Amino acid sequence: MSKALRILLIEDDKVDRRRVRRMLPEFEIEEAEQLQGALELLEGGDFDCVLLDLNLPDGDGTELLERLHEAEASLAPVIVLTGQMEENLIKSCLQAGAQDFLIKGEFDSDALQRAIRHARERYAQAEVLLEQSKALQRSNVDLERFAYAASHDLQEPLRTLKAMGQRLHERHAGDLGDSGGELLERMLGATERMQTLIADLLDLSRISTGQVELEPIALDRLLDEVRLDLEASLRDSGGELRGPGELPQALGVESQLRRVLVNLIGNALKFRDPERAPLVEVSGALVRAGRRDSFGARPRYRRLEVSIQDNGIGIQAEQCAEVFQAFKRLHSRTRYEGTGIGLAICKAIVERHGGQIRAEPRGDSPGTRFVFTLRAAKA
Image (cartoon, rainbow, N blue to C red; front, side, top):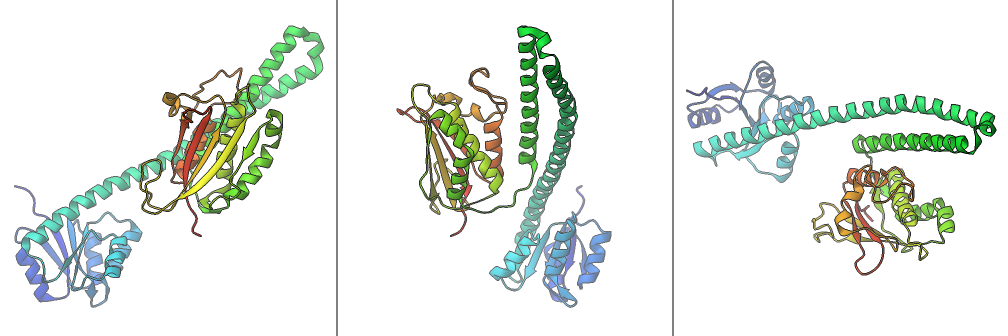
């Protein structure tokens, strides 16, 4: 025989308490007529559900909900019993953790028992999600600590190796001969690449686990600054960067969005076709409310889609998802320098901003198009 469910009924009206008891004959019910008494029972008891009247002699029932919510107490699911159904009241109680509402005088025994069952199911699911969220937060903290420690421990011997190699080169380069000098230069180059790789890995870890505080960003101004940052690469490659002149504002972290633009435009200049000068075109447009974006999703917020396309060597359609994997290289390191983490960092930044990113061939035109979405700032 299953154990009877324990219900805490917080209700100051004797007639309403008696009515609820008749509706729940097989339940074990404890009663409280005031807020303070209810809090004492909750702290000392183990209840399967709470039926809460909002109008109590010593306070508003929403105060109890807020206390439980602030304390993140895993005590019991709460069903609010109210004589009126006001939108603002419903909203505030749901935000404070209530699972359901029932209007007094408008529910019978079946409806009440069904509400209790559903409230307990939803509450159990919420508890599982809360525990998973806490576990994920702990994992992220541990990952960030590990990444920082690993970065520090790995960087130290690399700095020593690099310093000794540079000293060897300065003092004894002439004694090593051509072959020895070449080996030394290769060693120093490998040391620098390893330092860059460790720094990129640490950045990827921090971006993937850190919090973001979004603020309005003028993307057209940011694009002008990126143009200056890449001025030497544009000049050396004979490339051209075309922008729309004006881009909608986005919500984001400026330093991170700058990095996305630098990486994507820098890649377009790096992976250029030797037969033609690189041309990089940047455009952006708002996704109207209610309209699906080009990812097929109906945005919850106003969305801004940014497109960066080039006329470079391009990628195959089947490789479009692979390019965002860390360490995934589609081309030889000897021909194109890099750690293979840049696009993984772009993906992590865009997703931390609540957006999506994809790569795609340009169809009949040479090159690649990258498209990513951001939350649009309100005008």
